[in-house]
Amino acid sequence: MKTKLNIPPFLAVLLAILSVQAGAAIAKGLFPALGPAATASIRIGLSALILLAVNRPSVTKFSSEQCKAVIPYGLVLGAMNGVFYLALARVPLGLAVTLEFIGPLLLAVSGSRRVVEFLWILLAGAGIALIAPWHEQNIDVFGAAMALLAGAFWAAYIVLGKRVSKVLDGGNAVTVGMLFATLTVLPFGIAGGGFINFSSGMIIPGIALALLCSAIPFTLEIDALKHIPARTFSILMSLEPAVAAICGMIFLHEHLRLNEWTAVLLVVTASAGATLTKSKTD
Image 1 (cartoon, helix red, strand yellow):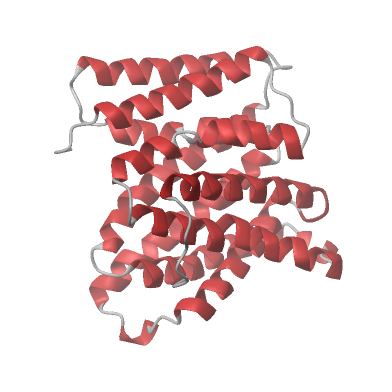
Image 2 (cartoon, one colour; image 1 turned 180 degrees about the vertical axis):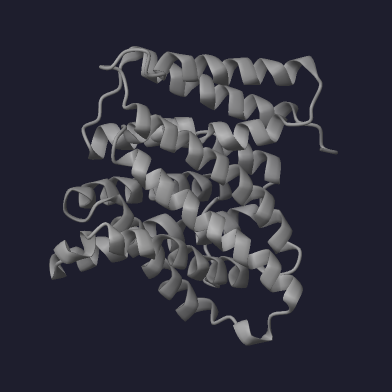
């Protein structure tokens, strides 16, 4: 979107995080009727339509190099969102985002041999240990595994996103990526049978989901990145697990235990620390 925003960059990033997590809360509210696969399909599909209307990419003019970059980017984007929704259907929002955040965190410290980097890994590992399903009453095993898998896809998404950004501008990359993401999740949404339960009353929540999880945060983040360093942006994004936990508590009445809040704090600290200590040449 090309609309100029007059929002301070720090506030823009926080609003983007809040927007995504509020959208996730709406998505979870649709799960009982549609299921996670159909909900993910609606969210990604509507997001693709909105971005197509705004950016209008000339797909037929893409080079072979651009296609080879944007197609895997879109497929991973779809897998990341679909798998995350599977996790969200089984574990609280705050814990799902906390576990998912492990992927980008490990990517951030990969290849480093400095002692301080291993400290962040240990902190994140301690966080996982606190919420690991050691006991049946603690956390859903499948949901936790899906959240970690979503984190792995998130790390791949970051790597592929950097690659596609070198051959396509951001608007075209995200728009076409969303189209292939839709193709990734739509077959699972259809197979799950959730679309049968879709009603006219779900249109507005579906549009809100697409706006909150894609159009609005993408606009806010792009605007913020023009005014603040990437490192500052990454530190602010480290707050996402904590914001997710708070949104889960407010919108979904998901109250975390003390050990789970501690896990969220450890992962947030590890992510922010890894960003702060990461070499500028990395």
